[in-house]
Structures are given as structure tokens and as C-alpha cells.
Amino acid sequence: MNETAGERVNRLVEMANDIAAYFAAESDQAIGAEGVRQHLVKFWEPGMRRKLLRYVREGGEGLVPLARNAVEQLDA
Image (cartoon, rainbow, N blue to C red):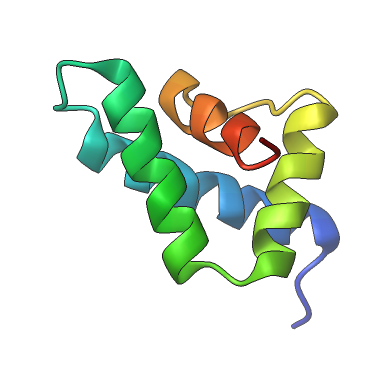
């Protein structure tokens, strides 16, 4: 069975939220967001990052704040 585009984005959201959960223990949220951002840059393919950034620009429903903050920093 083929995945739809929406299912693929949902999976990226789930993965980004999982990464954010790991960094959520960081008391300084800016440092936590930077940890998430660095993980995305280091381990995710550019197309995955672009797709998630586009999703955030369209509303980013379902992303936890730490993940959203990190993804928004990908554009910087």
C-alpha cells in the first residue's frame, strides 16, 4: 500500500515530536530547540526538512512547540 502525502507529513511530524521529547528535558528551551534543529540537519535528508518547513509555514498542526521552534530555525 502506498503512503499518501498527508501520511508522510504526519510521519515527519511524529518523528520531529519524538526528537523534541528527547530534548524537552533541557531547562533552556532555546538550547533544546537548537538540539532538535541540529539533529534534523545532521540526520534528515534535505527534502524531509523542506517538507516539514513547508508544513510549518502552512500551519504546522500537531507539532509540539519545541519542534516547531526548531523547524522554524531551519530557514534562518
